[in-house]
Length: 238
Image (tube, rainbow, N blue to C red; front, side, top):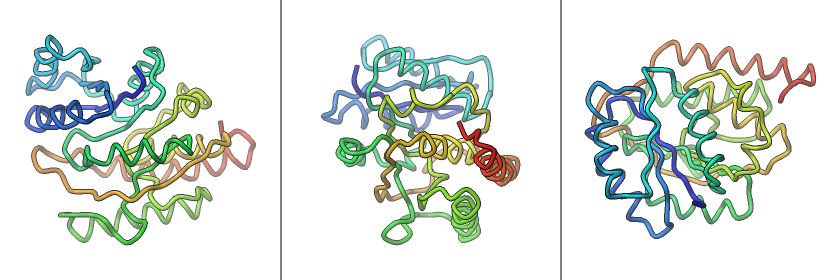
């Protein structure tokens, strides 16, 4: 397989069938890996039923809620072990438009990491309350100022990695979650000397299910940017 989309799930049975239809129907021969944290709503069972007739669909079942960062680390390892060259992060809730995959692949021809940015060429966020938009913009500015990371949207979760970028960082040393995980991975790819490119995307708030955002995730991100800055000053940013 050359291209794999990783989708962490917890209670996403409502959204997932339509998302899988959209992704597997694209003309890019995508493989999709669902990393499910023992969803009570039967998300994993839905995927298993579909896998019987769809060889490009894969499932990692985990025993319980272990966090977004952990889900992506496990997903990255699976994708690398199975030979993927282009490895995507993507939400399960249709916040990220599957039709943008082609733009990511085009950009990835000249970059090691492509970030889907909500904040280049204007603000491209739909259906968010103003307080959440302000929080997101502030978090990204804060991250950029403290770490020096030269991107406009470090907290977004729609990304495409070239294989070499993930192989070039220490996944076992990344322990953060949520926003912090997105910042940390991008920072380490940048510090490892890989090329990063941002492309504009439209982010639409989830159309079904419940957001996983909470205060712990926000405070963790605030602390991680200082840890990254300190480690960088100590020459230990890997």
